[in-house]
Length: 497
Ligand code: NAD
Image (cartoon, rainbow, N blue to C red; front, top):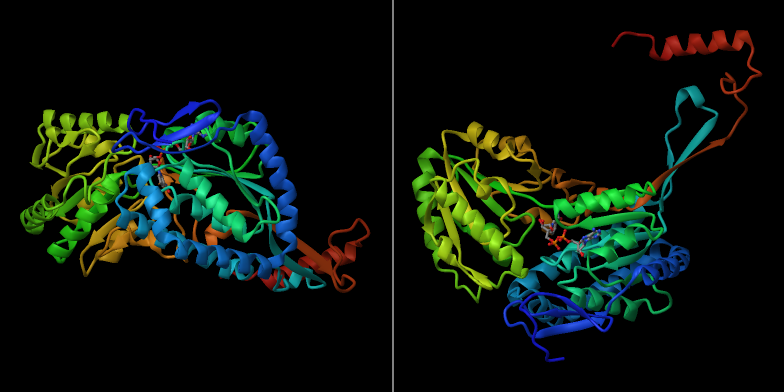
């Protein structure tokens, strides 16, 4: 258990997937690696477990999910420490991540019956002799494929929605964080020991691909846009539906009437938390001219106080270090200026906070996901220009606005799935709000009512309760009845609005 490998790189040895601490290279833990056969076997077991899980009903599942929630709260420090070992994430960031996961688990458990349960629909006049019923039925087995950057809250989003809806899960954690993934599965099994309702399969990308092809009812993927496209292609072979939670290049807009110091504080946290390895991390700031200088100064002051190796943990994936360095160098080569950090900020496995200004729109720091503790700040004429520049991106995940009078109007016009006003990233912490993106950031939603419906199929049932007065759906209708139907239609819908 003390072997030292290249820092951060997961390896498979003797059928075991070994993850390492990105800061030290020390082994963080090991789990059995899966292959195609074992993935199919896990999905087969899950299919049977799903039948039992569904038989518990809404209340039975709710009680168990709430017990699991409580267990996560009881062991929050243990889980945060494990996350630190595998990702390098500072302990307090891990605690905040688990806090959000607990909120989503609680919300999904408490609201599944209301959102998905059977309901009678209002009768329609034209088919008044029939009554409609609507309910949302589980798919059976959901495949969840997760990333390493938030190895708890990102999978718990789809897992909590899918479990509350009545599905069993086969979960493929990132190869960088398998031990955290296995911990989640083992802790759930303490609460639900009867059947393997939540299982993990471990390995590299091929194991994720095998899961897409193993007969699951739906796949919930969280990871990079490039991998999301591969997951869609694999699922397309069998017309398996997917949710894609992919990358982003989120922007913060600071308007003229913003509280500039509050905006700077939120920008630094939104950009630098988890060393910038956040899908909804703020990577670009567009700031209107009258408050630009004050904002830049406040950001530099606040980001300059962050200690690398303390608040700023290591970059989890070694190959990301090159991407971050390339982006910074490209920005500087194209005429950008570093007002904090710069190319020298990259000192493996760490990157110190870097703030760049005057970065041209065609540089990779503006266009591509950097996934490091960097922030570009661009001066704009007004909010209109800020909106146009924000939306000039193939991504559209989250975003933020600081301002007063027009803040919500600006938020509505950002081409993203979520926006925080006078805060950053806050929408991820509310159990009743949907989470997901547009464009290259993906589609489908986790969290909230939409996140529950994502893991169930709507089922419509009509039940006849009387003989038809105006029988339309039969060959036995008479010409006189058809005339009556036309008459009724004209009466009901024939008037111009
Ligand atoms: P990644 O795409 O490299 O890997 C994600 C998962 O997909 C891993 O479990 C990996 O093993 C698996 N995988 C790899 N190849 C596969 C294949 N061909 N078929 C099936 N599965 C495969 O992403 P990552 O580096 O783990 O995570 C970082 C990325 O995730 C960033 O782009 C970040 O923005 C994004 N992310 C998005 C959200 C969101 O909710 N939108 C949340 C967190 C992270």
